[in-house]
Length: 90
Image (cartoon, rainbow, N blue to C red; front, side, top):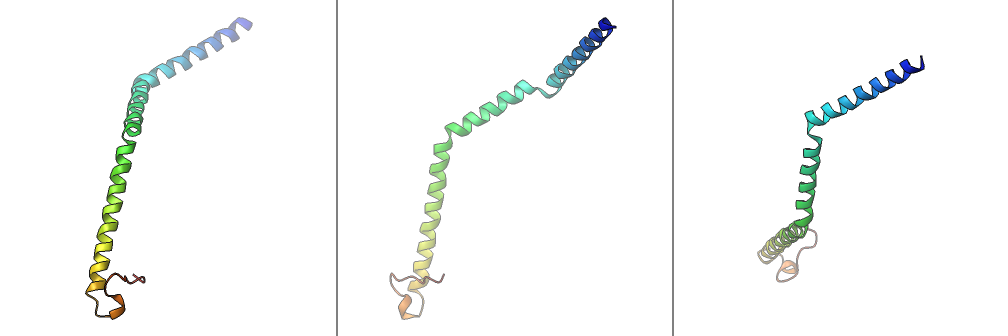
């Protein structure tokens, strides 16, 4: 009886190991982990460049916005909006 229980447990363990091995073969777990690691490393090493590009885009958009506001203020017929005074309600 005790021997049967041990054999059943060993057989269950073997089946479980076979399931794990087959799952790893089907889904390429090691390859996926390596791919994710490479992607994370690329993101890490290009982080500063991406930050610089984002800052440049934000600064460029702010420059364009300020330019547009100045043009609107200069071409507006109201006296208090002319020159360097911008309409703060925009």
